[in-house]
Image (cartoon, rainbow, N blue to C red; front, top):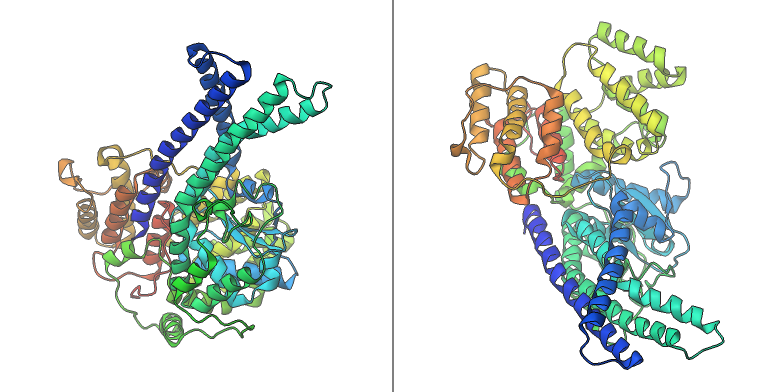
Length: 622
């Protein structure tokens, strides 16, 4: 099952959830109605009472679900902080936290998603982790203190890979939506507990109020039970898929297997009172054993998960295993082959669609190799907000000395002297790097740049704009940088992240498709006739394109319109998005070869469509 099929499946699961949700509400209405009839000794059939109970239950549940859903609109940060998580800053000096950040960074860049914010649950000594968020650009990874302290790097990598698979498979958005919806079902139980507690202070301990409170708690328990059943129905099979994906990503079943074994020897239960609401998000069971039935468990039994990995799990602590020969060969060939100016294997457009939402050990090894080659000053700089901004500015410095001096002069008028000095230093270092390190380097700056204030963000955007306009035209590398910054950071400084489907037909997005493909055709080809031919070939890859007028020339190249069109196209159905990625790939790769800059522009475009895609290992170099 590929990325787009997983997205479709997640949508279908959401629709089935609504059926179970409605059934749970009807069951609670019936139970509360019968309880009131019994308490107040009314006639068995009373339309008025039924109406009042129905309106009351639906109103309470609706209010609870809406309130929680609105709270969760801000993304995974709300979930992590509600569980007691504390943001791990990039400049942390704690060895365990540094290890955690490095693992998360490597996996994010290797899988083509934004480097998530990482939260540490300091009070939780059990071994557990979770991923939460509405989109890949607001995702967070939460890890317990026990997970950091008790697991080796390989084991931690296996757990984090499991959580990344939830992000890539569309489970994360489904889980946070489930958390919001099911919160309403708990409202009745909580209301009954409050009422019963209030009556305990009354002089009349057995009045109707106390009985009603007890009845509400009993009815609310039905909601609690139904909530667990719904979460179990959704999450159990997807946990098996996440385990398998983690092994596929790391090519190390021992890592996640040993982590699961350590959980079975200790505990994964959380102390937080919010653990029940978020239990379906965790790596392992967070609320202890389920006594009634395994049907109520949000996770499959640990022994079955370990058995399905098909390994003999090692119990003692192990040394970090070296990358496999295949991984090492791929990483060496990808990096050294470019440095020697030798072309790599040519990449077919179909491979781009196949790679969306995937993560292979070759990509992880390739990413680790690139990051290891970064100069020490750049590795240190990405931990700080102002120095991360300086790295972005340095990436925009022009090769022409006159334009470069003009850019630096502009920086001197608006930025502190230490930032301008850092831009010059980083610019010299970046000039010596493999160009394919530029995009990973941008990704590494994202966590620190998220810490900017709104005023700092506005100033940063203005500065980026001025630097890109210094030479009077927008290069491919500048396009990529702006696309990534827009996609990764805008949700943190603008409206709440939204991944809803707004467009379901090609008619609704035809003009935007022409805009995007025109931009890619002009960027990927030099001869005007070839550009037009590439545009037409790309458009014909879209389903139903023959029912539209195919343009015989490119749209005027306007980068702002290109960005706005990408934003709208990100709200299409998964299958339409798959066709768009295919069309973009054919437009750029029509001639069978692609430069590094063209490959990175294509990746940036795919990422802007909301499709995570790993680095291209086979892009041919001209």
